[in-house]
Length: 310
Image 1 (cartoon, rainbow, N blue to C red):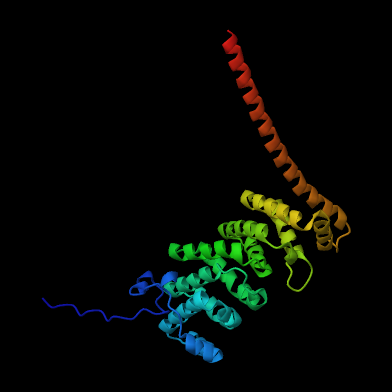
Image 2 (cartoon, rainbow, N blue to C red; image 1 turned 30 degrees about the horizontal axis):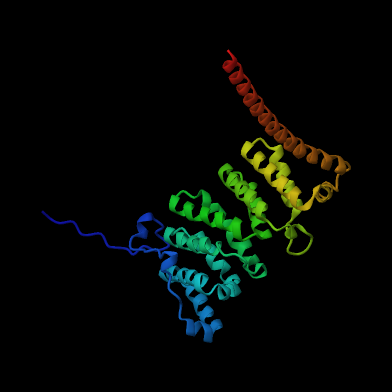
């Protein structure tokens, strides 16, 4: 019998974005990441980072993969150096997160997940990176491949606890506007946690402040909508904002939002009333339930006493 010729083996690359292309790829656990050459890094930091950026710009997928691993190593051992140069790698990391080759996408999300676990990172140095990269990572929370989704979700679970910056709020507000309901629901969920952890100072006016008008207007849109999970999330976020900056400040923002309309004050009052009525109703329900339990307990004691007398 004539044997069939073997198919030519083609090395997987970006043009072949299949799960099978992950064969032979070994992801490095965070604890197993090795330090880069510390002498080289210390003696010529600019040269080291320039060389890394050159490798990241290569068309070779393996070089791109290793460049991400180097960023992961720097994040673990040399965080200050990484943060100082991170903005230069925004375009590269974004492209890797969005890469059709799944192992490159996953490895870049591993980097983001680990980076998002950092506390007390210099906001001024990473604001552009967050604004450029995290919107793409958010979309990956609804990706078709679960091993990508897992890393993307953990990235945001870490970020809303640690990267408490306006750019992340802007990213999640934009996510709430998504027509894909799952993405919108993920966004309002992360936004709820982020605002709860947020420093009130970032709600003050200034170049580094949150766009309160955009945030509050979006919460109002969600509250007026028909999606119950979004409505509940909007109520929670609104309540936390009010606790942080006060009712008067929110009323002023609402009036600014509707400043071009004759009934700006009336609309502002209507929105405040909507949210406050919901809060009061929830408090009343809680109070009624506690009263019900108290009455049940008292009745049980009374019944027990009567039984003892019989």
